[in-house]
Amino acid sequence: MRTGIFLFGGVEMDDAGAGLPAPTDRRYDNAAVWHATERILDMGVLADDLGFDSFWLTEHHFQYEGYEIIPNGLLTGAILAERTEHIRIGMAFNIVPQWHPLKLAEDFATLHNISGGRGILGVGRGTVPREAETLGTKIGSFDNPDAKAADDLNRAMFDEAMQVIHLAMNNESFSFHGDVFDFPPAGIPDRGGFVEELSLVPRPLYPYETWQAITSPPTLDQVATSGWGGVFWNNHHSFTRARWEHFAETYASVHGEDLPQGEKRTLVLCTCVGDTREEAIASVRPGHDEFWKFLGPYGWSKGYMGDDGKPSPPGLIPTLEDSMDRQRTWAVGTAEDVAETIGMYKDELGLENLIIFPAMPGDSYDKVDDQLHRLAEDVMPKVS
Image (cartoon, rainbow, N blue to C red; front, side, top):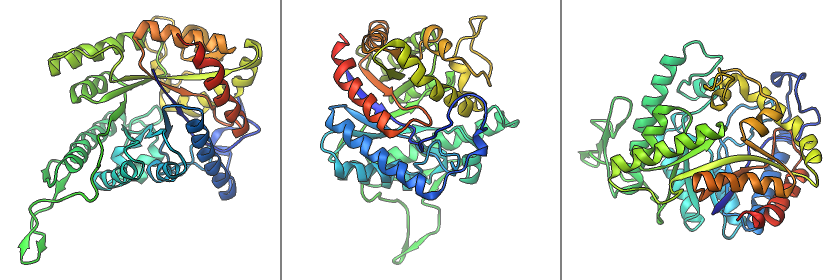
C-alpha cells in the first residue's frame, strides 16, 4: 500500500478550537507565514527520511488567517524535490480554474522533470470564493448565493483547462479551440506567417499520474470517465464504500476493463496518535474543532451522514466523537487504534493508496514531527 502525508500547511496557533476567535479575526504577519513555510518543507524532508511514498501540499491564496499559506505548491514542491531523494510530491490540489492552463502545465512539467519524475498532478475546482473570484473564476459554496451559476462556470473552465493541460504535456504540438480557451488565438503573426500550433516547453520527461478531488456525483463520474485517479476524503464510511464501488463500475463501463483492486482511488484519513486513546482525543480536539470552524461554511459537511441517513446539510459543525465513531473519517487513539481503522478501510475498500492527514489547523510543527514518527514507526507496521 502506498502511503502519503498531506498537510494543509498553516501557522502555529495557541488559540485553536471551538468558539472565539472567529477565523477572520486572526491576522498573522509575514514572518510567521514564512516560518511556517520553512517548517512545512522540514516536514517534507522528514516524510522522505521516514519512507513515506508521497507528500502533498495544498494551494490557497490570501489566507491572512494563517490556515493554508502555500500559494504555489509546484514552486514549493520544486524546492522540496532538491532536498529529498525518493518521495513523490503532489498537490491536493492545484485549483485549475485559478490558473492559466498553459502556465500550470509548464510549472508542473518543471517540477516533474527536476524531481526525476516524482511529481503528481493533483487537480481540483476550488473551495473559497475570496480566492476564486480574485483569480478569475467563481465557485459555489455555502456562503455564495449564486452557487449554481458559479459552479457551472467553474466546471466549464476546469473541463476545458484539463483538456488543454493534457494536450500540451502529451504532444509535440497542439491547438485547442473551445468555448472558454482558444490556443493559439487566430491571427498571431510570427516570422512571416501565422501561429497555427503551440509547443509546450518543457514537457514531462517521465510518465505522470493525474488525481482529482471527488466531492460530488458529477465529479465522481467525470474522473472515472477521464481515467484519472479519484481522491476520497471526509465522507461517512458507507458513502465512501458506495462511491468507491461506483467509480470502479463507471471506469469499467467506459474503458472496457475492470480496475485492479484499489487502483485509481485513494482515501484521505485524518489521524492523531497518542500513548492512550484519551491522550490522543485531548490532543486532537482543538485542531478538529478549528478545522470545522474554518471549513464548515464552505459546505465540507456534505460528505457526513445526517440522522436521516442522507448527506448532512451544508454548515454542519460536527463533534470529534461524530467524526471518529459515527462517520469514521478521523482515526484517533493509540497506534493500535489507528492501525485498526486503517485496516478496516483496507478490508472494506481493497485500499492500495492512502493519504494521511496528521496535522490539524493550529498544530505546532514539533507535534507534526512527532506524529510522522509515530505513524511511520508505530502505526504502519501494524497494518496488515
